Structure formats: C-alpha cells, structure tokens
Image 1 (spheres, rainbow, N blue to C red):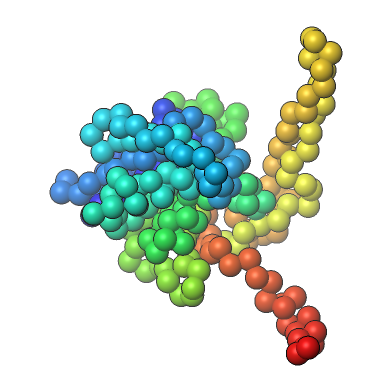
Image 2: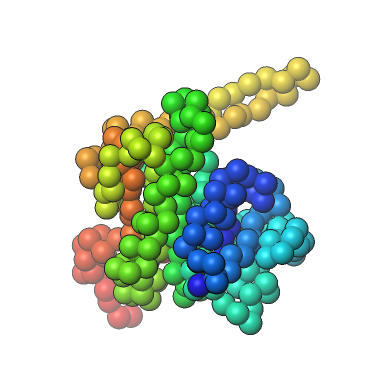
Length: 263
C-alpha cells in the first residue's frame, strides 16, 4: 500500500511523526509512506488553497517534502507532482495536536486536506488528538492515537462507504485526551454543535499603543448533544464521523422548492 500523509501543524510537528509511524504500520513492510506537509503551521486555514500565488516545494529527505502553502495545497502537490505517476491508495491527515470536532471541523486545515483528497477521488481520513492539561502531563500525549489509529483505519478500509455520491465521503477521527489504556471504546458520531460560539476575540493594547485582537477558543464540548463527536470524545471515546463537501441543506431546499419558476 502507498500512503500519502500531510497535516496542518507543519513538517516539524510531533503529531506528524506519530502519523508517519501509524501510516507505516498500515502500509506494512512492503508499503510506502510519503509525506507532503506545510513548511510552517497552517492551523485554522480550513480548505484554503494558494490560488493566486505559487507554492515552493522542497524535499527534506527520502519520500519527505515540505510545501509553502496550506494542507489542501500539500495534497494537490502530492497528487499532481510528487506522486503524479504513482498515486496513493490512501491519504491521511494529522495527527492534529488538538481536537477537530463540532464547529472546529469547518475551520480545520487537517479536515481541509482530507476534504481535498476526497474531492480528488481518493480515500481520506483526518485524525486529531484531543489535548488538555491531563494529556499534556502524559509521557506521550499522542498515546491514544498512536495505539488505536491503525486498527481503526484498517476497519474503515474494510467496511466504510467512500464514493456514495458526487462529493465523496471522507472520515474524521478524534482520540480522547487520555492514555491509550483509558480509551473507553469507539463511537460513530454526527458532527456536533456546541451551544456557544466557537471563537471570540481578546483585545489587547501593545506597548506602542496599537490595538490588537487575539482569537479565543471556547471548547465546551459537553454542551454538544449526546451522540455527537464533541460530546462522545469528551467522555473518553474515540470518535469516527463521516463527512463530505456537499453543504446543501436538503430540508431547507425542500422548503423553498415552491419558488421554482420559469421566466
């Protein structure tokens, strides 16, 4: 198996090393793992692409490249340049340092990379590791992902639906902020919605008198509904959510169908 991996935390991120190990386990001794990741951190860029500027591609080692661009750019560079003659069987994005659930899914560069891969017709999975004070104190904050990711990916490859519609399905996997032995199990979940806005601003005045705004993140995951990614992962479960890029609201579309008319 040939696997392409990327992330949004950058080529030097510790979570990328974890993903490389996970991918190698999945690919097996005769497989190939290729890394094409952003040259610097790209968190929060969502599905952004470098449409109006070129991207620099630099090789860092065998099967390892960095792109001055977004995670979605990295997928495009990997598919259409690095692996243009030998396409991958699977694309993995992560392991992100921090969860990507509920509204975070819409902002995440980790998710954006997986979405681009799916739109290009490839099987894609995004992976994220919850990160809080408890997991920070673990010897390995990525222990849950490192231990449980490969078996979950194998199960998805064997049983999941991938190309059910024009916008192919991809999968979002989140691991709870506990040691691998404390993960309570796996839950298939819906994308959650928290009762409070995901982001706000914290205004500050610099020493030169200029005004700046820092983004703040409100992650009240327990406010999301039971059965959602945000809630179940906060309860110690690894979560799997099926996603696609079709943003159509089917219910609302039916409501406004009476507006159809010919002029």
